[in-house]
Length: 256
Image (cartoon, rainbow, N blue to C red; front, side, top):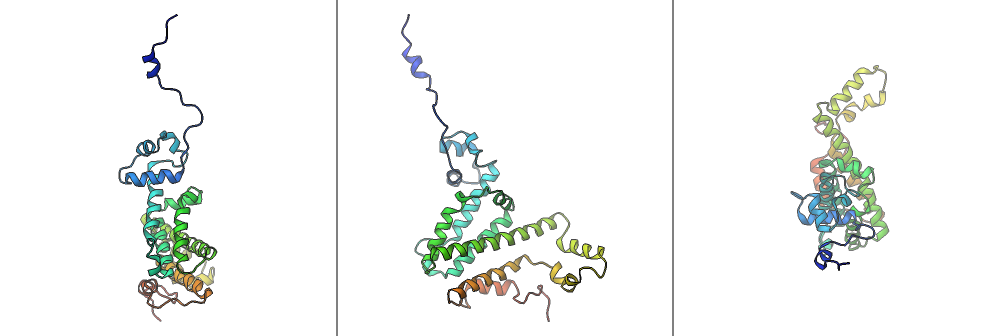
């Protein structure tokens, strides 16, 4: 019986024993950001993390979904002040920046709304940013519980507004503008139907997606009042709302 060939024995890789390497959605997104979103591939991400491409599919379904998740994270990060700067920016402006970043991201990538509804933009995409948000609020004396309530209220308002704006934009792109569709519905109904809506017809038909900014202002004013504060009139948020929308609820262009 001959001895085993040492060269052949050393050349044969040892079979992997146990479970395959585990990786989190956060690690996948982080790797994609480091590699650059313009040309990143799932193979590159898998190689960087030392796992098989199949492992990534437990967390993302495609390259496009990965890029959307990574872009979502980047936008939120860029909207937050850097450490040491939060104290120089009013807390309401920081909160408004967070809301604006969310709105812009979800309107530009409405698929993210579906991903969130399915629970696919879970804690891995949120906890690091939420920690940064709470830290920025803490600089202004807003404790963790208050900051979480503010964050959640902003998120619910903003995502709802973004869903509405995305729907209006999609209808317009499909050649069926919301205004036209609403008028057709009223024309199809009897004249005595929907009396309350008919009395507010122009408000019902002419929906301005920018109206959410007034709701944002009101939310922040209410939060400030609960803290015994009054928001300064020269806050950029209030100035922007005054320029871009009306406070009296009338559609733009309508006068008394």
